[in-house]
Amino acid sequence: MRRRLASAAAAVLVACAACSRTGGTGVSNVVDNYLYDLGNRDYAAACQQLTDQLRKQLGDCPATLKRHHDNLPVGEYAQLRDAHVRKVTYDPKDNTKATVYPQDMKVGTGGSAKRSIAANHATNGQGLELAKVGTAWRISGGGV
Image 1 (cartoon, one colour):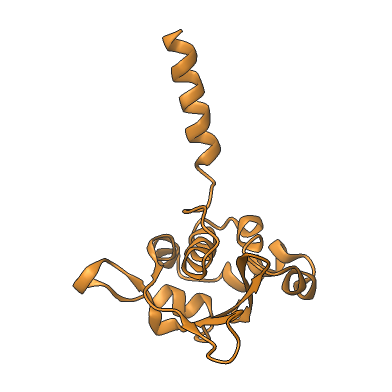
Image 2: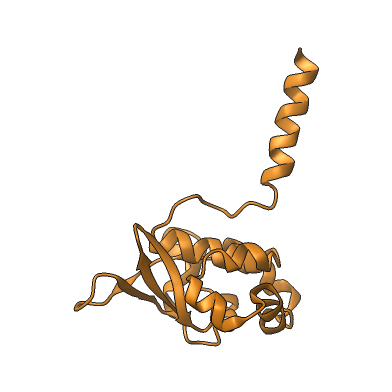
């Protein structure tokens, strides 16, 4: 019985090794997951954080993201996995739109958090635009 439980636990860990960081659908969670997936070079998972419309615009979404992001310096992939959103700017006229600017994507915690250069590079210095789709937020534009 212990072997079965250990095997099942190991299978869950292996299955989640490629999972995004969090399961939430809020703006911060979506951007954190997108950056984490880029850091893991899991472009198919990163595409899941995008709106359907943006995925259609990109065509072969995983291949397009790979072309755009595969030339980042090697050390920046680890930083992308640790990057997180510190501030979200919501559109004051439309509560279904938000932006996360590059300066609001950080690495580190608390007072030691600093701007993520990798997130700035990954978004071409543009940050990310998000739209609320139903009850979930998705990346709709910006420096994808």
